[in-house]
Image 1 (spheres, rainbow, N blue to C red):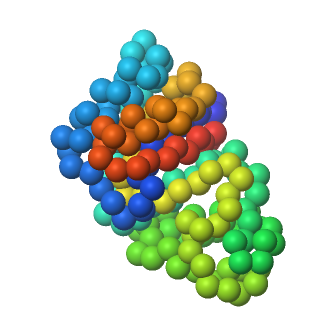
Image 2: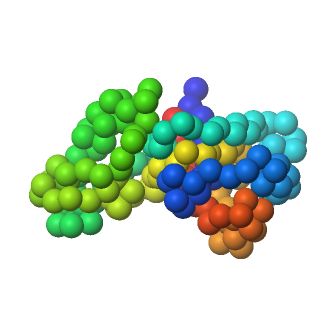
Length: 154
């Protein structure tokens, strides 16, 4: 059975919030996502020691290079995730597989958004499509840092 995950992560991959800020964030998440209140959805909060990929799972359609605009093979991405699944990333710097230029993983153009973070709030099977801009701003205000969302189908 497949599952949907709606994740909220800071826009800065290295940033982590204080625990009090997370409590404020979670109260708003519960208000905004009806499946959580009804008990159909679960929320996981994770602090990672290293930067971790937060990908969109089966939603990923394409990865583009910001340097040469070429398409990057999604198998390269899958291999990279597998290689770092246990230890995370100490750096996001890479040599682009298409043109050999220097860039970072978070600068790649993911068609469905992907991200990197040391903190993540994951809402499992939220019965909620996505947060709007106003909701993301409210979530960011509660957390004390700008956030973005990643929608995964796994």
